[in-house]
Amino acid sequence: MGPSPIPAANRLSHDPIRLKCNVAFSAAWSIRSLPTPRSADRDPVPDLPPSIRLYAMNSPAAPVTEDEFDVLVIGSGPGGEGATMQATKGGMSVGIVERFARIGGACTHSGTIPSKALRFAIFQVTEAARNRLFREAGIRPRFSFGDLRRSAESVIGQQAEVRKTHYDRNDVPIFQGQARFIDLHTVEVEHESGGKKRVHGKHIVIATGARPYRPADVDFSHPRIFDSDTILKLEETPHSITIYGAGIIGCEYASMFRNLGCKVNLVNTRAKLLEFLDDEIIDALGYHLREQGVLIRHNEEYEQIRTVDDGVVLTLKSGKQLKTDICCGRTAEQGTPLGWGWRTLVCRPTSGAISPSTRTFRRRSLISTRWGT
Image (cartoon, rainbow, N blue to C red; front, top):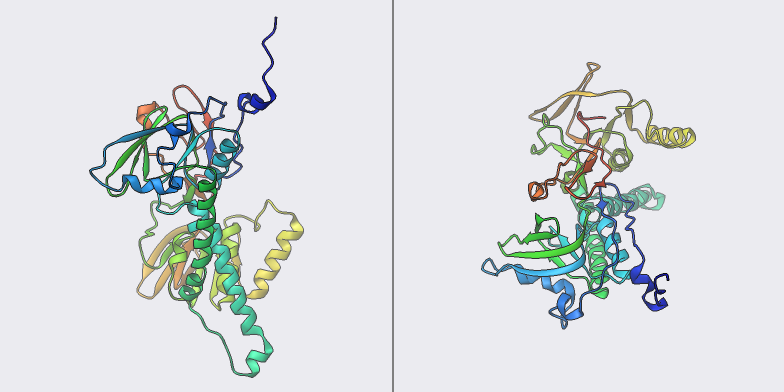
């Protein structure tokens, strides 16, 4: 005699659920449904929104307390948010750990949202500067890069608040702090003030995102050398800039700085811009960038970057030297450092996978051994 059928009301909680987070550099274990703990076990402070509980660890003298969830997500970027909402809608108890004080990850605070808000602000200034009525009236809007960047901060704050309401509405607590694995199912979250909290997850989703790749021989601490994250902290508009790496972000910043009146050198390590696109789109993109005045250099790789009193000199392997006010490097990404207790799990981090002792999951990686690959 076969097993008794599952009632329709409970069928969802018995079906396997696989988290599909199609976001670069996020990784997830497949999740199978498990009995959901009682609400009293997983929400000891029901009168407050779950995200308020992140302040419970702020005291250095606070004892190490523990919570348990069906799914524990590390990282609140697009991958972590998608995994959290998918598991929550499947009837599982979910907790999320975020290292920074505000949720949203790099996408919200240093990547997609800030750059798009900045691009829109530059577009508005450009449109006003090209308006014939303004020119005839002698009105020429002038804003520094820092002014335009600050105008985008309201958008960032709004996006962070919207994402926070998603977690509150779905009863997902947020634990702020640095995650460190204690064992395969236990993570210790350490707040910057010193407070610690241990959180158990029957299944763990690692969605820690990525950061720009930084070659060891380039001093990114110098005030004239930037990557795609730190360029958003630039205060003054430079007269000239060299952008090393002509990917999506490199082309985007080349267009933005050119519209601000900067002289732009765009160094491409490949034969074409954005080779994954159709040739017609590549040709149109190159045409418009050149028409704006962007100088594109294909098939070039850097040999050395040195700073001088009044700028940065980028020496290419072809022998060319490009001197500009600042230099921004954007060629590849690497996963966020995975240095939290992996030895406890007998794990072997590699560029393409992390293999725990009992399970294996894959992660996409663009870690390159040299700048420009």
